[in-house]
Length: 441
Image (cartoon, helix red, strand yellow):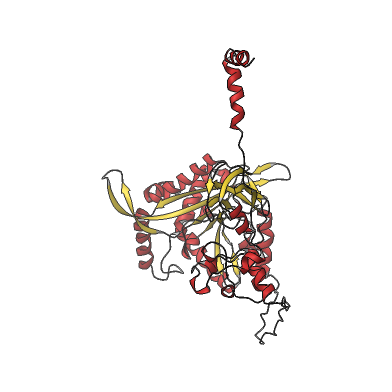
């Protein structure tokens, strides 16, 4: 009978025999299995992301070996094992969210490790650790439950004999000490806020907007509805500097002929801008939203932003297309004197067609000027500086006097090509005074 069974087994297909043998691969756990929970890591954190595992199922760990690394919204923390044993199960994959108080891993522990982790009062009483021989690091190995008990009963960790590894104080050690010493939980007194010494009270006050600030508030609020196209460039002033010096020499030779002793670059920039507007009249136009049309204006009333004691104001030089550079300089002088006194007339502030903001007189390089609804473009002039510049002819660095400029235009009617072409023409007139002179009538 046995011979027949043996022959029958030997003649079975090989995959059947392999299937029978595979039954022996089922793991058998001999020790108790402890779920290792994700402890409260403070800061009121309730969940963490598992960013790295240091163990996998089947691995053997010792007490205080690293299990994993978790990332909260505060910091990353490495979690160490409380038990020695074998990893049976990992409850989360990498990058999954683990909940505080939920199991991280299941660990098969031997009976000795289990008893140490769940130390009873009798085992604590039999502990013969001398406080003076405890590890110097034992006082830093406090679990949250140990810290809470020490705090509630007013104990110091050095008063308690630790039975854990390296003299670590376990929760059972503290409970045994409390019972042996018949300690009573102390009342947690609420902290009493002492009256602060009288200090000077910070004061706030509200003041109404000035008339100029009210006008700016209304104008800029309306400007928020305009999509603004920005464009920035640099203009070389070397040749223009020599041109201005020549004009100032002429002014100095004509005593009492002008209300000023010398001119800045601004009158030249304004006249160059007017010449450019003849070639790009849309930059001087006005967009009329009520009938969806563009109003072209053949007069060039170029506004000049001024910083005054009363605030920012923008008077404009009327009919620049009909004025010489020295006429423009005289008008700027008049407007500046009146602005400082707060004596500008309404006509000086109305009717502007395009604006120049000379922010560079205060400082800075590039800006983001904001256009007003009655105009289509504005340009801000940055502070001119002498900088090293690569000369494409000599292939050397040469000093150049450069001024940064920043444009804003109404993107509803002005595209990038138009603002770039217009700015390039204005730039060519400034960089070549001879070309500017040829355009003057």
